[in-house]
Length: 342
Image 1 (cartoon, helix red, strand yellow):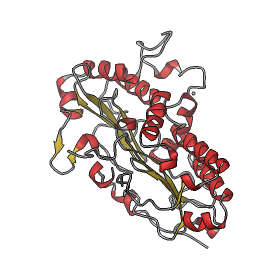
Image 2: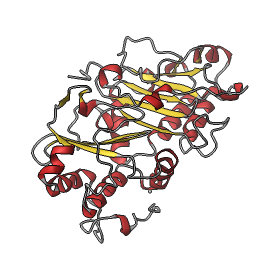
Image 3: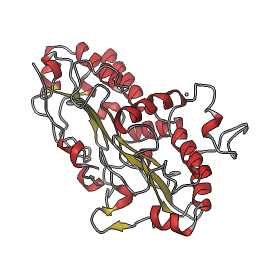
Image 4: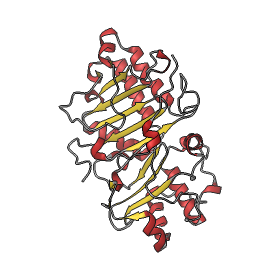
């Protein structure tokens, strides 16, 4: 069956805020050609958070006016800017590669970017950016909220199929510094069955292995006819009704595969963010408090290799939308009652 659906969200680039949803490098080292002098030759690479402060301190008044904001700055059109996320948006106007930044500043930004990922994933993220945005730096932007070294701060990097954060644990209760987004359109806007070349499809493969292990009654629970709006990932809390089959009702081998799926989901990110996400899951009661749903809608090729699926718990949502291409929305906290947008 041919699929030629469009993705209005990609075309519009409209942002979504928290209220709406609450080892390139080789494995040994990052290439010195893209690292600033403050990093080169160091026995231990500086943490991204310390580099955010160095970047902030290096900026002149014009630069700060354009990309630096108070912690709770509210944009007249976009609301609380720090907490916004979308599949395709620009938080500020200057691109990272622009002459707006000095060479040293661009190198520091690059080191921050690389430091937020598992070193083994940097080249894969570069491929995604090349496929979707013409490469790293060309269509990505940054903003800094708060004053690094003087209380809460967070750097946010955005672009097509990219929202990542570096917050130094300034954002209370949330993993990854807040909601994040990643995606890939490796083989064109309308991807083919199997998503050839898509760096994130392995995550869906891991989830589909869980489905293959389910018995008939479990599959009936797991399969949901219609998928929700992709940005609709608000926390439902412990009393929420989550779509799909409860992990608590699974056998031990099925649960083990769900755990492997979770590990596959957090794999691209740095160790500190992986552990923070796992800690949030533990605080909400573990995977046994979650459910796993697979959506019949949007099944590319009608092959029952489910392209769209969602792992959800009281304060955990990881929503993988794989049709027409991969969009993934992530929202994790340790408290479902958290006010997601002040």
